[in-house]
Length: 332
Image (cartoon, rainbow, N blue to C red; front, side, top):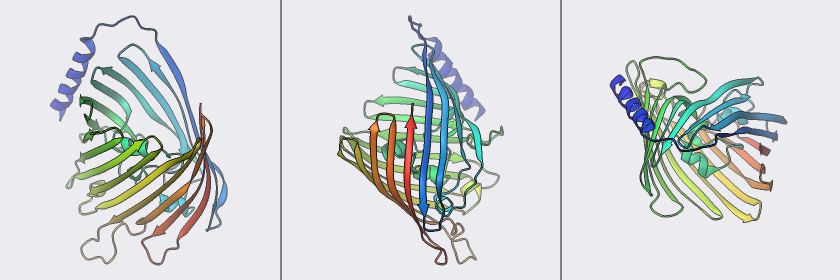
């Protein structure tokens, strides 16, 4: 692994130094994004909240080099089942979400530092409503949206690209150094305009068993329509042998009129049953989620969504949860 890392860094530096710098005027811009909502639930949980705020700065240093630093302020992460059940923390925490330098030349690009991962980035872009709910793998903690490491991208053709990730594996909230890396490989194919086919897999070694994570994603996004379906699987969750998770996520949106969009989504997560047990090991968090609503864009920098969110737990003894949400995303 050390030899692989050294080889990658050597290629990265060689590409960087082989390009002559042209006259360039450095420039930058601030990053401000706020997610807020008002919600009313069947469990009598009601209130206003700011669920997340991103504060940062992007800087274009030269034709090939740029940097990004972003602070993430929000509530402690919980699964959708916990969130809709009111089992959430009232405390806000601040984390350094991104702090990386990027290099891009031709069909090759690289990010190094505390980078945004590729685990579910394509899914999130098609879903397009992170301010309402995160994409499946992020929502159920199959992986982190940011981590320390290096990500290399190469466009082999207009319709075919590859990305290689070598990451610490703990995400951006638990930074530590050890001899284990979460190594991932993604392949993205866009055979016709609007159609996206992506396969991603990563590997995290453990003391005995390795965690293997995969996502198969097919989507279509063009003009007024966006729809996607993904199948997600994780073997040996948190490197615990035979603790497997799997699930699907299906979503779609349609622009019914200028500034108005209808959207919907269905998720289902399940786990296996361990030898000698009668219930799946993750049964308390297994279940299905439904989201449906309408989004309004009064101006370029504001999204407002009135929507229903429901959670149907796998456990027969658990209650169904129903919520009405008014979500707002502000970007400037």
